[in-house]
Length: 56
Image 1 (tube, rainbow, N blue to C red):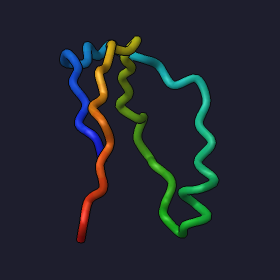
Image 2: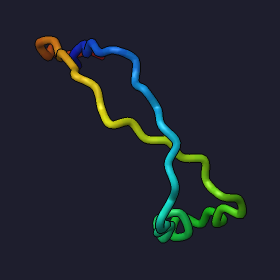
Image 3: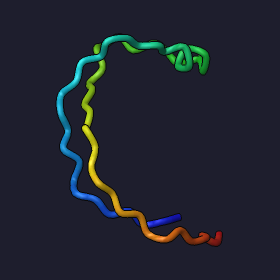
């Protein structure tokens, strides 16, 4: 695992253009009946610390 540092993500509204939910139905789950709530972020700069093993 590693620690990551970044400023908060700034979320923007988005619109779904197309949905391929074959994985959902293949898992035996019902298809969504309502429009999805979606957001996106253009990204943030991230600093990632040195990775280290986690025992357990």
